[in-house]
Image 1: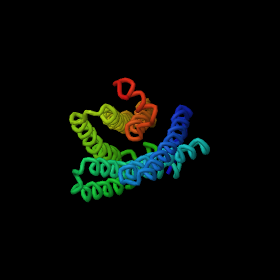
Image 2 (image 1 turned 120 degrees about the vertical axis):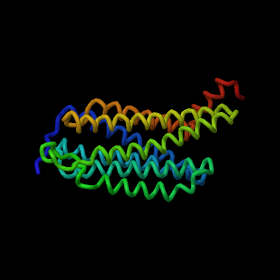
Image 3 (image 1 turned 120 degrees about the horizontal axis):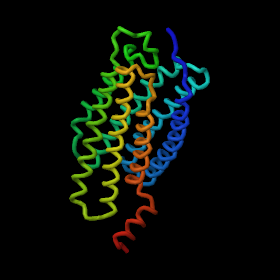
Length: 254
C-alpha cells in the first residue's frame, strides 16, 4: 500500500492543532480545579468533555507530526483520525450527561446514547474508511467514509442542538443577567460546534467527490469554530471574575 506525500500547505494546521491542544489543556485543568473546588458532578462531566476534545487535538497533532517528520501520511496518521473522532464521541456523550444532569431530564436516554456512540466508534475504525490512504489505492472499492463521518456529524448535531435548545429555553425563565449571559454564551458555543462539524464534512465531500487531497480551506474554518467553542464554553461555564464584574457593571449590579 502506498502513502500520500505530505504537503507544506498543511503545516499551518499542524501548528494550529498544537496551539489549540495547549489551550485545551489549560481549560481542562481550570475545569478540573473548579470541580475540586465545588465537588459536584457537573464540573467533573465538563472536565471529561474538555479532556476528550483536547485528547482528540493531541492525537491529530501526533498523526500530523509523523507526516511532517517522514514526509508521508503513514500508519500513525491513519490510526490518529478514527482515534481522534472516537474521542469526540466520548466528549459528546459526557456533554449530553452534563446537560441532562443540569436540567434533570433525558437520563433515560443514557443507555441509547452510549450504545449508539460505541457502534459509531466501531464503524469509524472499519478499514473501508480508508483514512489517509491515497485515492488510487481504493478506487472502485467499498468506501464508507462519508457515511461514518456523516454518522458522527448527525450524532453530534443532535446533542449540540439539544443543549442549544435547552439553554435557550432555560434562559427565558432566568432573571439574573449573569446566568442569562452564561446561558447565551453556552448557546453560541454549541452553534460553533455545529459549524465546526459542518466544515469538516464539507472537507470530506471535497475528498470524495472532487478528488481533493484533504485539508481544504474548510478544515481551517472548522478549527476557527473550534477555537470559538473553547473560548465561549470556558466563559459560559467557568464565568471568570473579570466577566462577572463586567456584567455587573453593565447592568448596574452592586
